Length: 368
Image 1 (tube, rainbow, N blue to C red):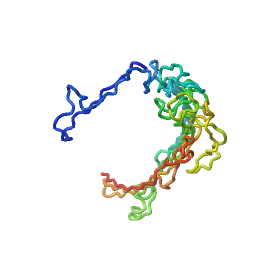
Image 2: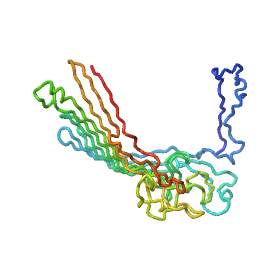
Image 3: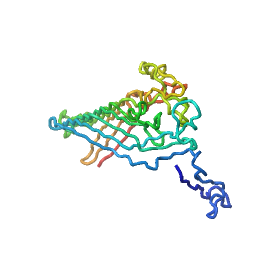
Image 4: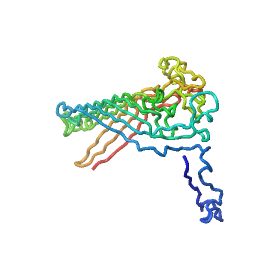
């Protein structure tokens, strides 16, 4: 952890403040009371974001195999297996902590003269496996569509972010692959389905059908309907608990998980109680929690965006297009990730949404 680096920070003079005499000069840029972010005199009590000097670059292996079959003149069906494995990934968390147990954790740590601190190592692993199915019809006869479905699983060890503060950390930093830390990744989406369609009314000049009346064709034709539908599984989250009841000296609030004492999936799945909160309890003193990292999931998500276009051709080269677009046309509400911190007043409750309210907009475009 030592030596460390620092930086000098000085604000330049601002001529808009009305100050006549400069408060900072080139000879003494810190005369105005600005300070530097300098290293501490010794590293022993310094708590910061450090990493193993022997840390290695992460790498991944990626592989896939697939088959495709053309169905008719305009439709293609594709089936793919896609996989990857990550190695030497970053695993953060608080290190120089003690194992769970009684007594002063500082005295029981590997290096009692050094304060526990954030410490990143290249010890993480991950793997991803997915089955991808798609059916696509290119634009033909005024109609096209695309259907894509992915069934996948993403697993990693440790946490989902850097420096042990973004996305959770392992309960036991020295064994990030142990039970409760090796789990589905925070970005794991087990099922993802997307469907898009485009349909132009085949009526009017130059189209497949006509009423035989030019004025009527002009009114009934030149319409286009578009849809984009997305549905996916919920996002994983961890039932954690604040404090350091394991007495390890870990200063990362929320590193502990709660204890599982029942079935969390028996909850009513409402905003006020999304999962069975009675299924969790505080772990006994001097122990880690038994709930796995990312062992719960939020509500599934689905959304439909729709648009209606109307073209008004005039002359040989000109065209006016009016657009009416609706995002989340059904105003479907999807609950966001619940509060997973055991002991919080909102434990098990959802206080935000993953969806946005319905939005309507109009637009116009002229082409020539």
